[in-house]
Length: 360
Image (cartoon, rainbow, N blue to C red; front, side, top):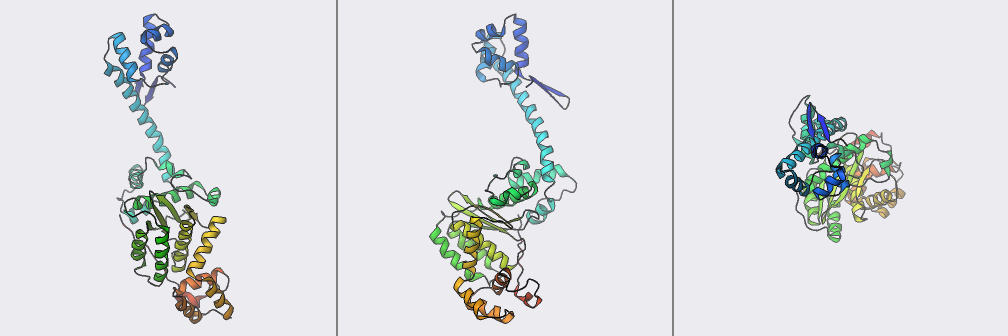
């Protein structure tokens, strides 16, 4: 490391630069000068090479030894540190521009009210950085930033990681603003049962579930999907409470409810992290089974499959009414199990599309 630095036609000298001159002018060896300064030769050598910051103690000793003020030396160190910080900040901005290229500023502007800043990339970066409440967008490239990635993390690109972390960061920032009681698993099981009664309430289910979950210490956040994140949902402990986030990617009623109960399954199993599409593993299978059995009682479903040769609009609707679920959930299960084709247009009316609207 040099004992001076040049940046944008400005030179900042480390205090060691001047200490070296003083030692040379004194005619003493560094070892003898160090003894007079009441420090070690190694410490003095590190200072001279600019590899160690000047301490208040050494600044005081220098001021006494050669008749300068303490502030003279401390100001030299502060000026050097400030330019180093400015230089590193400029380097960091270059990296931030690279990371920011993965994101679409339109997502933040349209969904969260960030200002319109056409072609002002650095200003857009500043806005997104402050909105996400991070020191640098570079932290979004880390797989362990806020929530653990499960098995599929090995297959994710840096773009996927950045976008997934972005969504989770937004959810966390929303969650920490909520004051909720300590997570209570027994209470949560009660409100989960209540949530199942709302699958046919397409217009008002979200605030009802959100408020019920809060009573059990679970903060429920729905976010508009950030294209390319490949994220379905996420769970995270926040203090004594739990955050549960899902997005509106492919937000048909059946996929929403399955995703929600998949994440609930993770919470019930004490398994927190991000769920990505096409993810496999024991934890994911356990969460899938939980969602399947919660949404459609397994015994009733097997009887339904056994007692019917075909699954048309009326048959599916009747069964859904019997188990008090949205027909789209039954349709989605039948499609997933290969009992009904995904291209069967006669069943299209059973599917309900959700869209999350959020601002600020």
